[in-house]
Image (cartoon, rainbow, N blue to C red; front, side, top):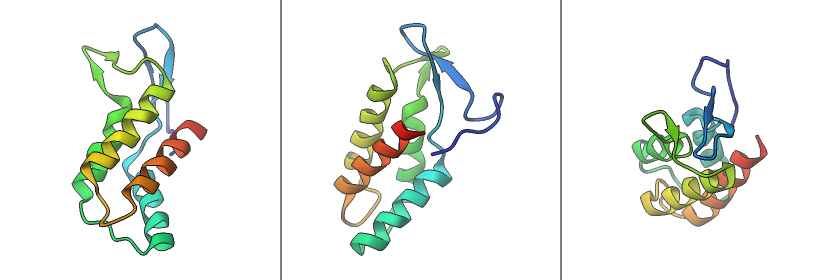
Length: 106
């Protein structure tokens, strides 16, 4: 998942601990990861809205404050959301792990 300009959707946000965390989970990037998983495991994206919802989770804020403690917590929340919303017809567990790893790697 990639970042963009400092004022765009990937701008840094301040976490509950006061640290800055980049918003790096873009819907298009999550779709690209999903498509790779689909190709490898013969899955199909069945719920694009669920992909969009999952992409929003790592950057969640309340009153401007990042709700996740750190990037690892945000990645875990992304994976958990993918598993619960199940945007693919199969292999959502694999997709969740890969998406979280990609999120942390960027």
